[in-house]
Length: 296
Image (cartoon, rainbow, N blue to C red; front, side, top):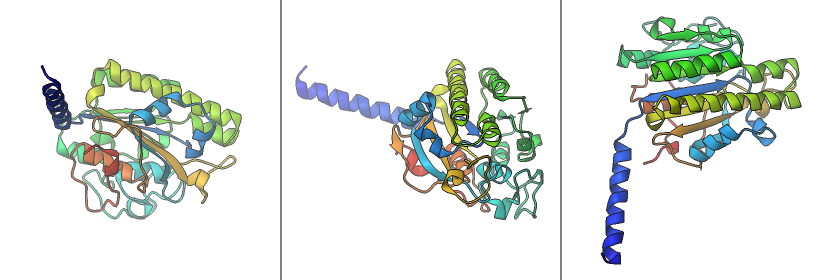
């Protein structure tokens, strides 16, 4: 076989492989959120699992929260595709909208990624596993198959890995809380804070391994982000340490080792997940898919 023919065959096989990859479908999305994990933490903390995700995927350390840089407004925005002005959750611990939502879905809540997925298929497996009980007020419980509120991040990680391996959910949201707890009790940008960040990175490693163990890694996308960062022992004000959050995504169809330079707001997370799962985005959402993070 001459050299030109060999090159021609290699090009054909490469093109065929690319077409097969393009034809694959994202069937699972795992959203991991770490409470209080400011993007600035990457300067000092050792986070090998998150660094590996960045090498294997697309990322930004310049994503931003909505205002205020508090928990409920941002966890809601992350899955509801819009800010507090529209979904109505405006304070740290909002258990219901503090002002009327601009639009209500069939669960009498502002439309969320949970609503969109359940509308698309009544049989899809969907779960929420969260340490902070306040998350329980920010999603329609009737829409999900699995609703679990363990005590502590070790228990959250165990519950999540068990659920992934057993049920192989189409969508799973995992909330980790250790970093925020230490930020409030000891302080942000302290040795103890970075130790909490590193513990969280280890939990993320366990979750990633469970996806491999479940045999679904090849058609899964994992997205890691946070609700806010912090300053001293608090958050909720206007500063970049409070408002800049990490946004890291890896998996099927995601570019590798790619820094996203386009603007990312936390409500773009919902829009990106909707696009990955081929769900119709409601007109009331203002979030946009982070399309530059994907191949082709």
